[in-house]
Structure formats: structure tokens, C-alpha cells
Length: 248
Image (cartoon, rainbow, N blue to C red):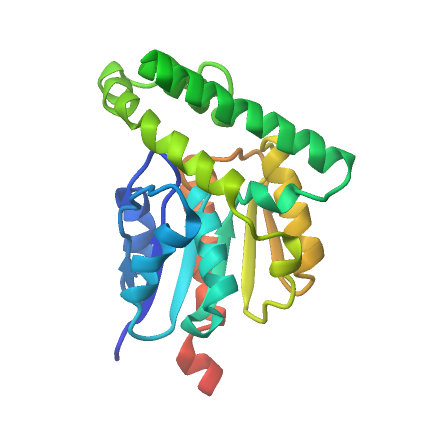
């Protein structure tokens, strides 16, 4: 039996290797494809080579920045998708035009982006990446990492800055998301940061048929901190929307 393809898009500061555990979970039934994202500075440019490689409809999974890219693909090329899984997509552009809490959340994440940009300009790569990590994972998360890992991550601060530019400069708004007719799973950490919660709420309001699944006790990095539970929920969503089951 031919395996249905699943494209897995990672978060900022990571790589396709983020999905190794999920790929193993899906292996018996699906062909997992986990490209390394290039961070070219716009969602359209990031999505273009991914879409170009899609020779048939796929299941698309994205986390954080990868979730924003996945949402862009779903919005512009829904014909290429069998299902969509968004894990805390950082589609901050969807907060524009929202209520007072959305505005506060957008200002908060814009300040984080500005700090990243300032630290990059100053050459404080390790300090800047550390502040980015601690924002999403809580104070002390950066210092708890092995020194070798911190040293390896620091030079990627430039990619973080480009990802923020792509997310905050994206012209699409919440109206552009409404009307998506795909099986959609929204995964969210129960203890995540305000901007991620607000993006999730905006998407739930715009996509009432989407399934919201909250992982209790998890933060933004739930695919890593709550790997088994997240993998199980994704696999269940994919299994509900497998081609052979839909055709049966």
C-alpha cells in the first residue's frame, strides 16, 4: 500500500530533525517529509519551494513559524492538502484589527522581535537567542541547555529575526483565512504565551469547524516537551483523514 505523504514544518531556530520522533510514529502508515526551512524573510518565499515539491495532496503539519507557513500554504493552495495541523502557529499578522487583548499581544510580540533585532545588530547572539528561548519556554530554559547546544544556536539569531519579519510583515489578515474547507486540527499548550493564545482564538473564531486540542501543562514548545501526547493527537487527526478511509 502506498504511504500518504505528510509534510512537517519546524519552528524557528530548529530544523527538520525536530520531527524525528513523529516521523517514527507515522512511519508504518505515512511518508514523512521534514524539510529545513530557509527563513528568506517572507511567508510566500518560504512556502514556494515546499509547494513546488508537492506532486500530490499531502497532510501538512506546522509548528510555530512552520505553522504560519503551513497556514499560508493552506490559504493559497488548499487543493494541495488533505488535512492541516497547526501547532501554535505564530501567525501574528492575524492579530491586526482584533480587540484590545489582541492589540496588547501584538505589541508584546513586536517588542520581542525588536529585542531580537537589537541584539543581532549588537552582535549579542547568545544573549539574544537566550532571551528568545526564555520568552517562549520560561525563565531559565536557556541556561538549562547544555553549553554546546547554546553555542550552536546563537548564530541562528539572524534566522529568528528574518522569521519575525516574515510573520509581522505578512499582509494577509483574518478575513483571508475564513472559508478554509479542510480538516484542521489546532494544537495549543495550556500554559502558552499571550500572543499564541490570541492567534489560536482568532483562528478558532474564523474556522469554527476546526478542532481545538489543548495540551494541559504545555507551553509553546509542546512538540518537544509533550512529545508523545502531541504525536498521538497528530496521528489520530491524520488517521481520521486518510484517503482510503475517506474513500471507503
